[in-house]
Image (cartoon, rainbow, N blue to C red; front, side, top):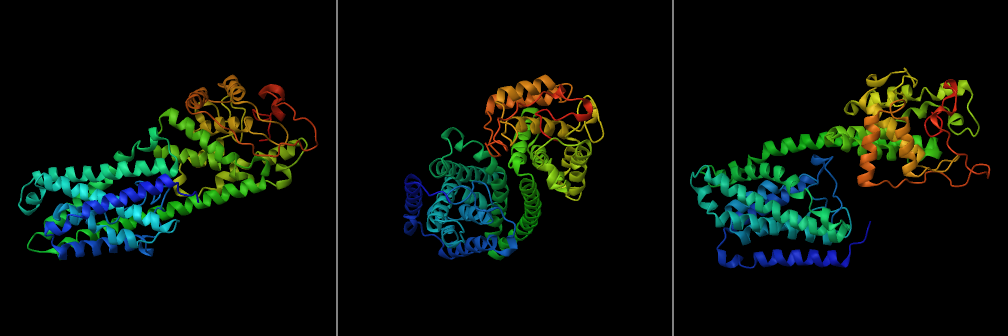
Length: 464
């Protein structure tokens, strides 16, 4: 684990001191201590529930000192916001402390993460309560002042999100070395929607708490939310299992075909670059990344001696290797969430002019994902050092892709890759030994048309 910088430690301590200062006026507020204790116990219970087997499949603590901003579902948020709607600011700041300080933390330094979590939540709760009370939201909760009660609650939710966003961005800069210009980008908007939903649940809790039915009825609000969270956690658990399966398959391919180690991951990254330029939504772009990662999984069905053969392949051996798209398609057929990935695996060696394999599809007959992966695959193969040749420079690889656009590759995908790399750059990784197998210079990669159709190689001169 990366050590926490001294500045990040100072930042955490300052956050904790700020939270302590917010709670100092508590004796003068005449807070209802019974409600404070009950809310604190309920919040601690939610923390314990989130860390139990009931929530198996939860998002792990992320990159920051206390977790990835906006990462794991925060089961205690409705309770904290309900306390902010009912209690004075110093009392609301205390509600999150027991649960945050006693919660289970797996990553070190544990005490620093607990202190950070406690200080962050206390400051956010104090700010939400202060805004709510400043707008006379407490009276709106006690009396049927609708819709004004939604205005005050909404303002408190915004204040809660703003404090979390400011603090999260700061810890990303100091602890994770994230650039200042991008540390806060999107944090507020990503957290606002889920916290707004939690805020409505907290408001219902607050209204029922002050109703004739009392606190017990307020607790019933949490039951359907926790059931939905449990279902959501199981979905993520299943998805994580699928992703673990994908990682295992990719590792198996890398072990079997060691000369292309890491190739699959980079093809997935290049596919994402193209997807962003094409304007795909996040969900579809993620599926396309899986397509790039898994495009060569069918090589598990190809004899290892053929994948590692030093000399040229015979026509029979080439036909065996050219079966790998169909092998891969069969391997992933049962993974439901992959969707279009299967077609990309099956058709990523098709060519626009119809001379590809396995089915000789032409132009628009080739699925979109397969056309993207074909470009990403050829680009990474050309810009990576292999045992039989050195890597080409990125400009030379892009020039070759543009030369073959329209015959072998979709020009729209090539153009998207060129635009994306102009914006983001590319840093190819050496994936094989720099020393040629026989101590001879690496031969240059032949162009596409350098071999007759029956013996055609891929764009970079590699095997299929």
